[in-house]
Image 1 (cartoon, rainbow, N blue to C red):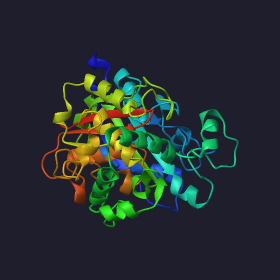
Image 2 (cartoon, one colour):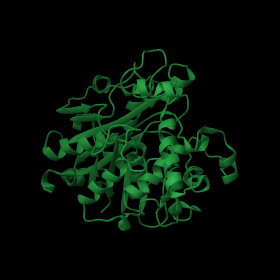
Image 3 (cartoon, rainbow, N blue to C red):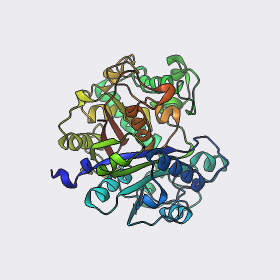
Image 4 (cartoon, rainbow, N blue to C red):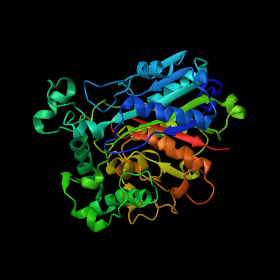
Length: 396
């Protein structure tokens, strides 16, 4: 690997996050601008310094209201940005905004790239204009979804429940073990004043909650929110001029080797997390044992199990035993997870929130939920089904 043109030339120079809430009285563009201004101030940059913008999945207002309501053009116009490079697209891993920004910076197409993820899903659902990731329910469904809806598979909870059921059957995992992902997230969220759900959650509460799609219950599903998260990817040569403590992007990966499908897999217990993990570790000399904490995708709790195995923190089929009891993944455990509450309790920021949290933890700026001790290396993952990405972040 030629590091002169790789992600190793890139740092995260600034991070910002708007207010996060269930039904905020602000539109997506306003929330995005709030997050951008925070990130610029964090880095000590001005609007004039920004020459790139990257996002995933691009504006999807009509297909799924609230899922991605802000286009790059909206942000450019509102903030009068002069862009040398910009990019957004749906046919990519959710981590593509950051991955593509790294490619642009390393190749010299841009110097400072805003990466944003904005959603107003909670407000859209409250207004009844969004019923699932498939859209409003009022338009004609086409593509792969036309083969799922006749069988009642309206949302990702159904698709992932299929995989979780197979995994539990094959490896003997239990709901009590799976519960530790949600319980750990809630325990951490109780320390985070910005988290959506902060009330205590017990194992009995978890087991008594209503089933959404067997074996996934209410607390296995993440929380739709309104909000925006921004990170700024810059060239590492800029580090001495920054106001912030830069975080280096040691490695990033988002491969697609298998089927681009939730159900047509050769093995339902193997998904893209495994491929992303192999590619990630091939791009660095660090290994899983070196990681101080992990912000692993928990759009559904079961996906975290796939990431633990895919990233090599345990062997295939051993993730449920790895999290059993919760000690290993607790704040003072072997591998702290979801340190801000994850998407299960802090809110669904579609992966970008993990970058924000990891940077804050690595800098020692996470406030009331800061981990104890020095933390220098973090892994962030995004997605967890057919499309997945992973990144390794490093502090000097």
